[in-house]
Length: 152
Image 1 (cartoon, rainbow, N blue to C red):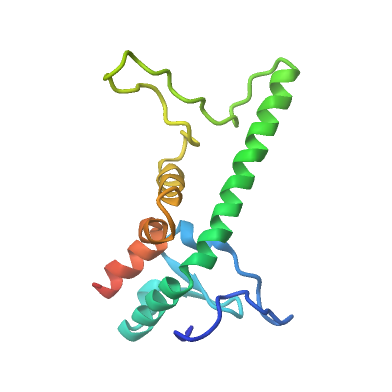
Image 2: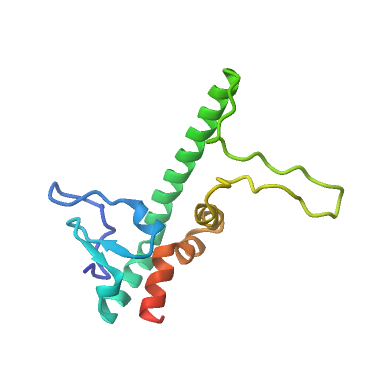
């Protein structure tokens, strides 16, 4: 189990350590140890859960930047693919939604959010990224599951 004072998973990696996969934040069932061992959250002790929560909070800025980089890259690739398809005259289902059309002043904007649109969890995570590392970490399925399991 990760200790509170250990560097973020993946920092200063040696060859025997598995690279850190930020997709672990997209789910709430398992944690992957530094050596690549998958551990079900349901099997972690209360102390291990608390240590893991403390570890994630201590290194949230690093994890936040890794996830932000992944999400921005994903969206840039989707926009590039959509632009290429548009140049060829073919609509693309992968393209992100455009910003909704504004109504008259004072009325709410209607239409789809300018996010992935097809995956509500991904949309929530993307919106949380815009609120900073603390809000993002609290909104991840992993942290929500850890806090539920630890009753913190």
